[in-house]
Amino acid sequence: MFYLVAAVLIWASAFIAAKFSYSMFDPALTVMCRLILSALLVLPTFFRSYQKVPVQYRWQMWGLGLLNFPIVLLLQFIGVRYTSVSSGVTMLGTEPLIVALLGHVFFQKSARLLDWLLGIIALIGIALVMLGAKSTDEVTILGCMLVLLGSIAFSFSIHLAQSVMKAIDPKAYTDVIIMTGAITCIPFSLLLVQDWHVQIHSEGIFAILYLSIGCTWLAYRLWSKGLQVSTANTASILTTLEPVFGVLLALLLLDEHLTLVTFFGMLLVILAAGTSVLSPMLIKYLKNKMAL
Image (tube, rainbow, N blue to C red; front, side, top):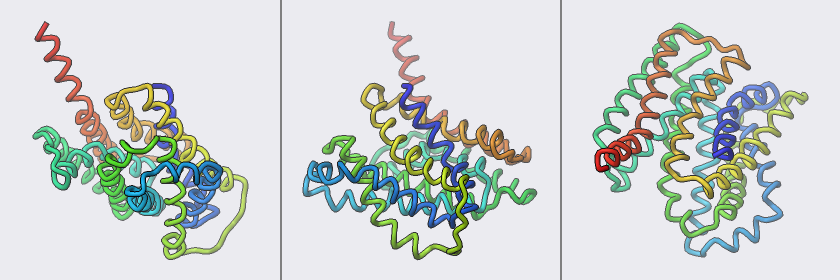
């Protein structure tokens, strides 16, 4: 479980590192540099890993690389430029619910009535976060919506990747998806750059290195290693801690300020996602207790 918690904590800090990097790079350049450096780390094993991918899945891996990295990261990192880190990671907290609802609508996976009700509660929470945006410059509707769109894209990728991940070794999958994501990211990043001015400084360099080595290469390695010794249920529970960690880190490290309305909205989103993940295990536990 330690590996999973460490990965979630690292991912929760990604938006904070992004904020520091923006004083040196445009967000689109930040994403491109992050992925290129991560690709260099997996380059020594990439070709061997790519050979392990069955031929019928290779084009799908390129699509997953495009969806997981350029599309998701560009939406999220450009979005967090316009909003606070705490509101951004709250949008990430909707992912467990989005995964369940997208599975019902697009992938013939039944969602529970509870998931739909929790989805409504999460939407109310998002609406409150947006409402709180009117009284502060730190939170914007545009930024929150871009991060939310990134979460929707990531949730789609989870469903699309399931069949591929069953056929490929986790380490090979990670190597290939990072490399294909980096390659497909380059044209999109160059197209979306708004400011080509680069101001090199130690703080920004450290942020880029942390995003590349920590949030991409190391966190994915920790997550894969953790999944080998933990159950999927444990992993899904721990993912709901990402917005909690993210909000706390933003308040501590960036001195962000939240209005009461925004805070209450974030709380609704986090509680809805946590309930969605925990409720099946609680129901199973109670049924087992009653059967004894």
